[in-house]
Image 1 (spheres, rainbow, N blue to C red):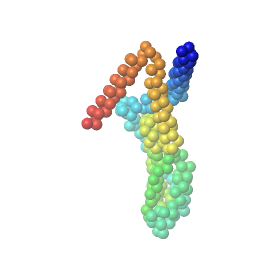
Image 2 (tube, rainbow, N blue to C red; image 1 turned 90 degrees about the horizontal axis):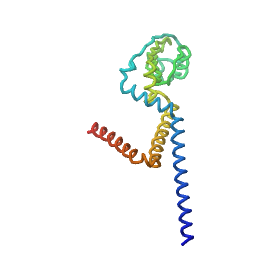
Image 3 (cartoon, rainbow, N blue to C red; image 1 turned 180 degrees about the vertical axis):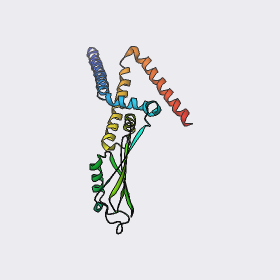
Image 4 (cartoon, rainbow, N blue to C red; image 1 turned 90 degrees about the vertical axis):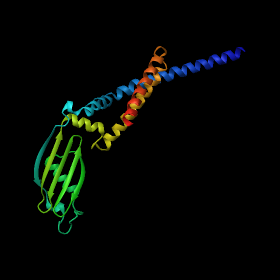
Length: 217
């Protein structure tokens, strides 16, 4: 009997130690993941508001700059022999226009016929569209820039941002998930707030679900 009581007490101590270790780990993760993700959480929180109310922040304002220039017609091939533009040096054309006007953003569609070639670039709050005459190499370039709020909104949506920013969004989503889950775990270790915290969590979840269902029906 005595040895049994000692065994039970030792097991109880191990359980309590494991529980404390688990709580401490969850607390550590919650604090430092929150701090590490602070900037991205703030970005996505604020831009959630600017996306929902763009008129409050002037996100629709844009400026367009019309430019012109010329590139080597040899980059555009022979329109008579290549009416579909299959032999256009797309990389060379893009590089020449980029260098002349400091065009930024990701390269988009390139279309060509026997008369002209069009090339576009896209970026957060940014667009550039070039129309090039295949005979002469002369082109017009329209560069449209939106304000800072529109740039932030595009970053929030991941529109025209490339693979690197897409990775940032994925990492942020994982971090926010972990912050939320570790926060929920911690409430189970705060006895005085456990019931209140869980009730609050349930109320918030039910309200969100009710609004979503109401909108879908």
